[in-house]
Image (cartoon, rainbow, N blue to C red; front, side, top):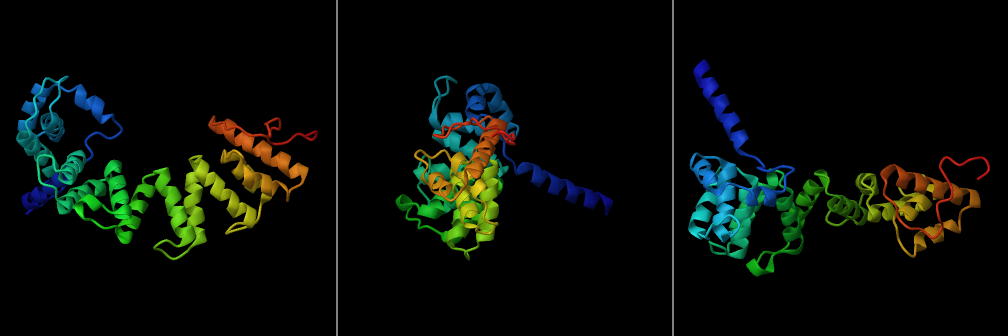
Length: 283
């Protein structure tokens, strides 16, 4: 019984190890172009997924630097071998091959199958492709847009920290695009993008504070957010300034400047940054 349990546990662990992103936080092109192709052929035959992927990529298109001639049949063989081990980059590559009809016939079902598997493993490029296809469709392969799948993958990419998707989640809930309109959820998503100093999110956040949407009305914070959005000319900032006192404007400018100093991320303004936060009594 103990031996049987051990075998089962090892099988589960093996399966979990096979599902992987091969080159997290690495420049895949640099890894590819600096590889020892002959050594990787040996490693590929031994079952190494990284080597299988690198060899496959070289063989599919050929590469003069590596002195490898194209052999699409062999390239496809090794890419499938890496994909069968759950290598996310290989799954993504297979999806691209089926979309473009390279070494295989174009097939939207295969694109969807392999791209989804790569996306579920957290490969950002795959998740981004899924967002775009489900949002706009893929006319060349006869695929229509799919709002439900679009929102699913949009949230996945947003949760991974991709600021563009975070902002779009905020817009989705603000406008009720395929979901119930929810300003509270929109605001929470927007805060994540603001924390990344995203200019569009800062501008959108200014409106929440100017109008008191979800939060209490705060014209100083609204001015600061508009100022940080980097718009030129900055009509929203100039508009809210008409409702403020000179002291409030000075406070907002000082806070905007402090934000930029802390992040070492500066943007031009017609007002200048001669105030420092917190303000001195003489300011």
